[in-house]
Image (cartoon, rainbow, N blue to C red; front, side, top):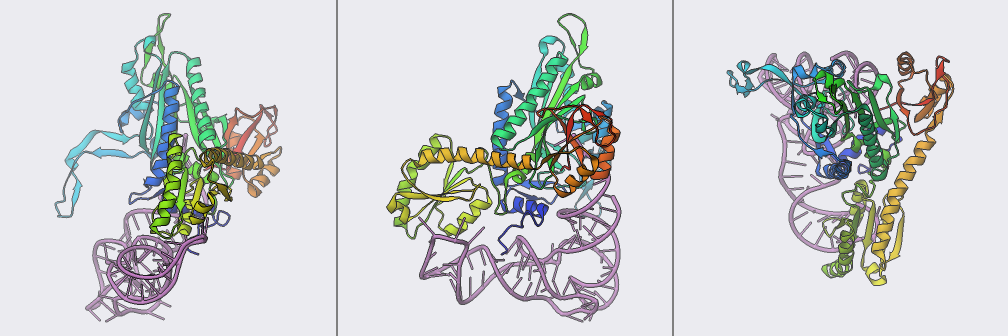
Length: 491
RNA sequence: CGGGGUGUAGCGUAGCCCGGUAUCGCGCCACAUUUGGGAUGUGGAGGUCGUCAGUUCGAAUCUGGCCACCCCGACCA
């Protein structure tokens, strides 16, 4: 049947691509590597933004906006930063077009060459620290707690909808502090914000941890991250929070007069999550029938499908339904009452399943007579006939239960796909046969990490902060290890 | 960026080897009958064959460039 999705088991990445398109989340655009986020997909992103923005404000941050373009010279001021991003920058070299002398459209006007090229921001540390230099004179100006919602461009060689696109949407927080301790606290606080968001809203269990030196953000002293496991056994970095030390302050000469006297460099952090979270959300929960969305992020948490043969029947159903819609709305739950008669109920059932609507209520003449409705859960595919009495409370309870149940399912999947391994042979075997997270000992050197990556394609996702770590010996070199680290093949 | 593959109506495709302007299904439009798991019938509309150039009387078909997408690699907060 052409209407069915490809099966996850047959071809996971085909399943993912098809699901993103068929559920109307996004599609490829005419521009290489850049996607069109469609209304349904964008409304999920908006929900994410709304929740995250609230959490940022709650922790004292305010939004601002910095330029899309960064003078080329800024990027090179922080040595490791430029090294990390130089290979994937889009560059603006001219500012004007003119009519093609051969009469075919327009060409770049060679006389309109920029004195200094502009980089389309791959991230905004440089332009922001250049600005902070002017904002900061004294300890009284600190801390600065700013976030921006923006688009950035990284010229990736191989792109995938939501997971890696040449242009993507994200938020980037950039904070400046008087002390190292305070900056580290900020970094850790925002990591916790991300972890809370992932777990409580996305229903996505994540490990909090610290990146190894190899995987650290270009220009950071320490990179904290949250790591999630997808249904194909691959890991996905879902958010990062960087302690920048004084690196950018030094690069852009940002100093402040300390309370105790004397000039000191400012301490910085930056932290971000992107539309990649959409990819995580899709891959973590969805099944062969389509999307499975957690109620807290679903654009349509509840849909009511009336079943009717004529206007009379629809009117009777509408009379039943209207009070429920109003009551749920007053509790902050958006309900779609789909009275469209161009599609059959069966078609609608399939469509809302594809789109991941968490809870479906069907009501027809039979139900009107018996004072019942049919409730269908997207996550478990359970259908039950229940009395109309107390429906609103039942729906509220069920939404909460679905949210929890999706999380628990993802959590138990992750637990079942997490293995502790002590020797390198078993490590490779588990990786090939099962995938998932592997907790193993590592001697702490970049060389060993590099060797493991070359041998197995697995990387250290993080040095976990939320798992008890006991010393041991490295599975590769036999040298001492401070504790197990989290390995996986990753997106 | 290297290797492999693909590009024909909104979507999925046949035709390509062996040149003569295009097949089928889904979807779309109209009407009728339908509506509790992707309805049925009848009629109808819709195509610069990715794009640019070349060969030819004639190109979806042969040749070359370019573009995009998919898979594998390299790269990748």
